[in-house]
Image 1 (tube, rainbow, N blue to C red):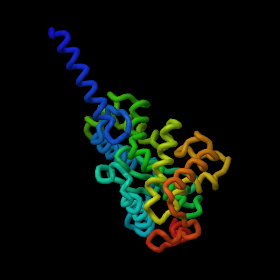
Image 2 (image 1 turned 120 degrees about the horizontal axis):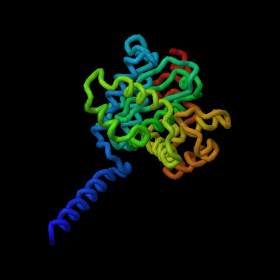
Image 3 (image 1 turned 90 degrees about the vertical axis):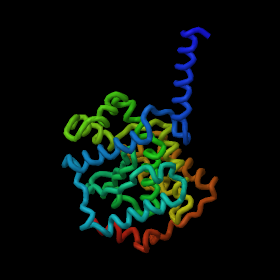
Image 4 (image 1 turned 180 degrees about the vertical axis):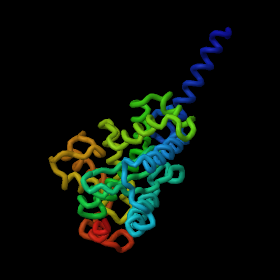
Length: 269
């Protein structure tokens, strides 16, 4: 084998190895590593907290509210379906904004929930369904993939290698874009499915995300759940996924989070 053929063979082997390793855990092809997700998420989270663009409720003075959400998160993680349960932070933050129906999750698992969404939903299963959906976007690495497509790999890697204070405006833009990432139809469908998978082993209605779509109906769907596929199809698909797993339903009981009724949780804000 001559030198050119050897070089070509080695290049092909390297690319094949990269492709294979990136397909690990069925999360798709990424040029970002899982550790890159963790590092980017930490930087974006710090930017969100320091930017002043979001009013994040203090943990010590809102301990009961954070305990409610942290318990919900812990129940989802304990189900065993979250791939990066131990690798990602899964830190919850509450944004004080009653006018916004939103939630989002950064790469690396920093979860943000708006008070407007909490007050809009009617029970804990609906909120758990939305939380599971957002966690799935991070866990299946949809958020990382979308940011790579939007900003390019070189720019995101430059953020990871920069010191505090460098690329501040760019980091702010990345943080702001997480509130309204336009996920693909396939990503949205997969996040819906994994929300069911995450909730099925818990006391929540596994089709909790469908309860959200039933409530919102044909009105304007928040950006965090996108507009495709349409809400009616998503309700049917989510319910079908829950039925296929023979998940239990407990729609009438809101007292599934440390014995605290959902209405009492809503009244904390």
